[in-house]
Amino acid sequence: MADNRIYYPQRPIGPLNPPAPTPEKQSTAPVHAGPSFSQVLDQHLTGIKFSQHALQRLQSRNIQLNQAELAKLNSAVEKAAQKGAKESLILMDNLALVVSIRNKTVITAIDGASMKENVFTNIDSAVIV
Image 1 (cartoon, rainbow, N blue to C red):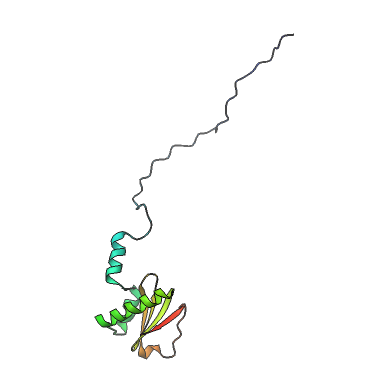
Image 2 (cartoon, rainbow, N blue to C red):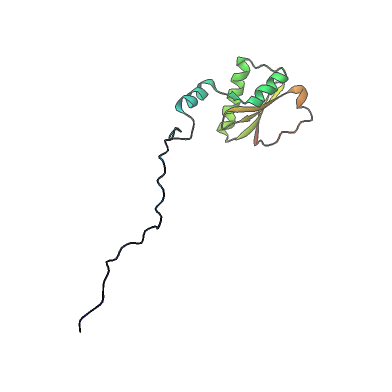
């Protein structure tokens, strides 16, 4: 007997409606999401930064820091960083500062008159200078 079957070649099943071509998007964002080299260099050269909130508190409470006090603050932040602190309360003379040690940024500032009867939260260490 002769084989009367018809054999069709196998073809892969593809999508019925091929996806519409999407326009190529050109990314203007940098390749890395972290800070640029110049930002890191500036931070290391200048030391401590002040958040907008901290600047408002310093201005409203008429607090001015001189170079010696900034040097003390920078030293206190370095000591806290060596101990592994993340958010620290730094007490200097008649001033309290809450500082993000990782970012080297002062979050808020409180003068001596406002410091009484105050509760400091979200800190893991304190440095007394």
